[in-house]
Length: 213
Image (cartoon, rainbow, N blue to C red; front, top):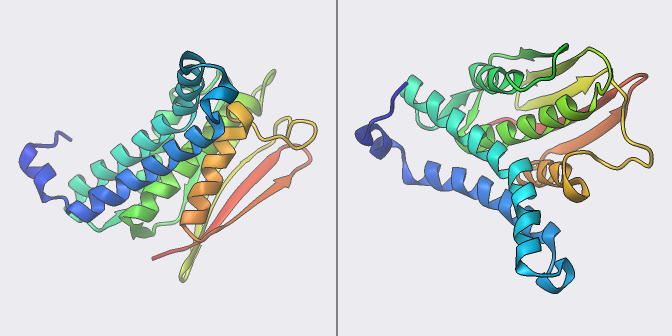
């Protein structure tokens, strides 16, 4: 829905600041991966590296923040976000870029979370689903399952596929030096969550267990 200047003014400054912090954390990870200028070579090569990094992470962060703000404005509640419709919005946008024959399926518990948690969860979901869309099914059709389950005080976000699994040696996909998973790890740390990966036969699963408040 359109957002007026008056609506934007109603959003608490601390909520906006928290959202900005999540995107800043992604930028910090990207900048750290790029390394000192003398290692990269020159400013132009560094800018190119960061451009790839931002494409992998910061745009996902911006999408997550934008979806959170849509939910806040739509509900009139500025401190909490209903996670099921929020993830539905993210999944809808991600599905538009899915390769032909690859489906993104969502199952989500009907729970809400504080705004900063919702932003971090959105970033994690975007990163993990994007990786799966790119790499899970290089030569066949298949499904990617995005799930959110919850019990009192705890929730688990997971992305699972039946595709080719992890690359040999366990390297993570998602950009230069595994940038996508570095971003996911940074978000998990900020949430005080536990990030686990599992090799399936076939496929791959990544799950984030985090306190729900």
